[in-house]
Amino acid sequence: MMPFSARYKLHFIPLIAVIFLTIYGQAVCPFIATLDLAQLVSGLLLIAIIQIILRELLLRFFSRGSQGAEAPVWNMQKASLLSWFIAGILASMYHVLVYPNFPIESHLKLLTGYWALGAGILSQIDHVAVEKYYRKQGIRGLGERVERISQRLMRLIAVFTLVPGLVMTVMAFRFVYEGYAHPGVAYEVGFLALVFFLVALLVTQQYGRALKRDTRDISKALKTISSGKFDVMLDTSRHDELGQVAEGINDMAQGLALRERIRELFGRFVNPAIAENVIREFSGQDQKNLCQQGQRKNVAVLMSDIRGFTPFAENMEPEKLVLLLNGYFSEMVTAIQNNGGMVDKFIGDAVMAVFGLGEESDEATICRQAVAAAEEMQERLVQYNKRLTSAGDAELHNGIGIHFGEVVAGYIGSEERLEFTVMGNTVNMAARVEGQCKAPNPAIMFTEDVAQHIEHAEFIAAAELKGLSQPVKLFSLS
Image (cartoon, rainbow, N blue to C red; front, side, top):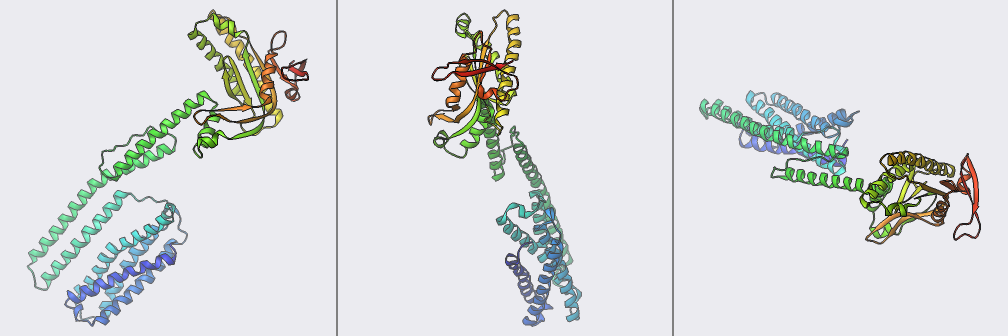
């Protein structure tokens, strides 16, 4: 419920009714004008105090256990309307008891003032004031119930056309009753008030329908965008703020759609997980800082290269060579990704993949994923070679080297061009192991750091690798 420190200001609103009814009664009503000013004001103030207390009690009653759609603007609206209706009845009863000699129309006039001015108009001030307060506190303070702009517009137009028309009609019939005017004048005023009220409602309804349609389309478009769909195109023909909002939403949807296409295209050049990470991190910092990042990770690096590719490529048309390599890489990448790996880069006919950069995994799991990927790569190469030979092309053969160790993973390059990669001795070791995967050695070989986690690992040889002073034990699958 709205705190009293902010709510007490609303208690000055009934004083508006006191001032209006005092002026009206003294200046217009021949019966109320006979009362002493202090006597009139004291009576109206008494009703105002009762109305304030009554509204407080009603607000507490409606707010008790109220949640979501009923809190809190609607609770204040209900409390305000009901308190004005009850205050009008109490004021009329008070006048009947205190001033029994006044004619009945004088008491009804007072009742009309409370209902028309209070419940009809002043309660709208309550509504706006409470809305203004809760908007400062956050939109959720307005509750879950949604008030349609078109409905609000219809209600306001109805109130601010009906109340003046009703008051003028009542005054006209009072003049007739008191002998100041011909009955035809009262009927004419009542007829005009009714016509103006109906025309205002008709025009408001037509405008409200367009407003309802446009606001509904905007709300629907925002929900569509928030669900990840950006094929939104709103009507921007309105020459007002809603037209500008619709145009802004269209531009936003097109921008988000372009962003998704860039993300999808980016994911084809680098690993999708890295693409997502770059987009997320790049949105929160400048490119220079992004370039300076690096993280130490324990990973398994897999290097694969096609055997005898250079003489193979010399005898093939470039277009056919690209088609053949794309088919080959498609199979290899699928095998790597199926086993939790990330393709780091393509180097000519070679593939470099990394395992262990994603979700945290233990060393044994990472090594097994890398070896499983190598096995699937070989299996897929057999199937791919069958398609090549059936088309009259020569078979492809590759070697795969794997090593586990520490690398530095990060973005390298300049501020104009970046590349995500892993660097370190582990990468160099995997490349040198891959260079040993030539006949008579197996096509898949890995170091002892990997072999200790592989159940069917078989020792092949202790090879002297370039740049290393001691021989390195190499293993394969038995």
